[in-house]
Amino acid sequence: MDGEESAGDVKIYLKGRPIYLYAPTTVEESNAGPPSESLQLEWVYGYRGRDCRSNLYYLPSGEIIYFSAAVVILQNVEENAQRHYIGHTDDVNCLAIHPDQVRVATGQVAGHNDEEGEPHVRIWDTSTLETLHVLGIGDFDKAVCCLSFSKLDGGNRLVVVDENNYHIMSVWDLSQDSPEKICDTKSSTEEVLAAEFHPLEENSIITCGGKGQMSFWTLEGDSFSEKSGIFDPYEKPKYVSCLSFAENGDVLTGDSNGNIFIWAKGGNTISQAIEGVHEGGIFSVCVMKDGTVLSGGGKDRKIIQYDSSYTKTGVETELGENFGGVRMLNEGNEGMILVGTTRNCILQGTPDLQLNPIVQGHMDELWGLASHPSQHQFLTCGSDKQVHMWDSTSRSVVWSTELSEPAHSCCFYPDGSVAAIGSGTGEWFVLDIETQEVVTSNTDGNEQIECVLYSPDGNYLALGSRDNHIYIYEVTDGGKSYSAIGKCTGHSSFVTHLDWSADGAYLRSNSGDYEILYWMMPSCEQEINISAIRDVEWATGFCTLTFNAAGVWPEDADGTDVNNVCRSNNGQILASADDFGKVNLYHYPCSQPKADKHVYKGHSSHVTNVSFLFDDSRLLSTGGKDMSILQWQVVQ
Image (cartoon, rainbow, N blue to C red; front, side, top):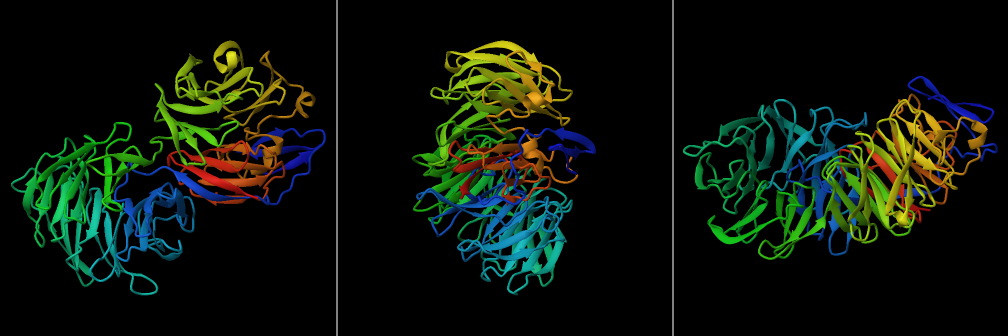
């Protein structure tokens, strides 16, 4: 993007196309330096349980450790506190705990960052959050999918499996200051779902995965020998989905047929079978310290307990449908268990009494975000049809409800009593915040409602659609009644952002082909007299293409690089959500091209939205495909 000024206006180029952004008559001086305010990551809402395994553990510090997006989270449930490891540049994919219970290894997928965007492993200290080693930059393909520390030698070796077509398995020597690869081998052309050093056999590694893969590897110097698991006389499953170890060295596996097989220590044959214990696949088998065993089903959502001789004890529980199936089981503190679920939740409790949610999240692409106008709460909605109201102080879900359609956009009525929610199908809903009931619903067009916004006085609701139109409704009865009064027609691409003027007389809009248009309300006519809108005071700053946000556009931007912006309520700072997993903080106004900024990482996907709380104490950001919500403290 080049910037040039003519009579105060700014011209920027997006995809080689000149965009004119009109300046106010008196231009407030724009500070091109970064703001004095900064952001500090305070809380991560979400857990990656939908498609990851072996990602939830209990630490001696009293914290649970898990990951979401590019952040590894250490959460103290009792103290309602989180710490965060943010060394990764993209999705964290796997996690292993060192035998010392202090160090951990985490592996990531290929990412945005050129320098450390390649798949790699980071070994770090959970007490200090200090990175100790970065392994394998240039060695791994696509992503790191499995990790395990050796047990008998005190954790001096690490086994790593990547997502190469042959799922290359490598072993690394960690006893040196600079870890070195000892050897590697092609492990399987099928998906590898687990790889573990045997806790009682020094050079033994077990892997399992797709097409009934069950392999017993022996590390001999700098090479491997392999024995395949023999399933006879039992049916070979499509997937061996998880493995665990009994205290005597037996290997326990769960598979896609709902069977648990016990493989006696030192052998590659099945010594005992517990068949058909789950309807559908088993995603996790956990051996507890007292010798009892738990298995978790994905489809049937059940947790079943067995004694140390693998006989059912009669204790079992079923997770609520809203939580999903069991993804990961682990022993917590004082007989408690931790349950990670396929719907991105974490539960804690006992299998014979009650399991309570301690982490909840969305489970599909997330775009909708709105801050409450007078409380420390915010609303999110996503393609999973879920609407969650969150409390930023207690860091928890206040309530959840499910819509009939995937949701994409949301906003609060000025008094916070209702919220409008736009769907992916052209239908939109008005939700009563107190009862969570749908007050009314309407349909405009058959394409996605990209953005929704009430006028500051609450008299109007504007809905920007993917069909290029903006639909305008008159609002009465305190946000309960809606009547269509017209639509704004003139954009040649889908509407992306909206702002109302402070007096509700004008609306401005951006579109997918980088237009900025102005509309008179309530007539819905386009205002083409630029002098009429130069000095309009805008109630919000959501439009990405305006004079006061010109500086957020990077050089050579293609127009989709910035997904959303939000001006703070005090008008001092501007936050942007970009396509590279970053949240950016600028001075406001931000009219100088290439304005300096603070950059914050944590998301692994495109950042879809940002919103300041009503008192500017916090900034919220949402990740698209990472489905996470990050809560940032604004530090003055």
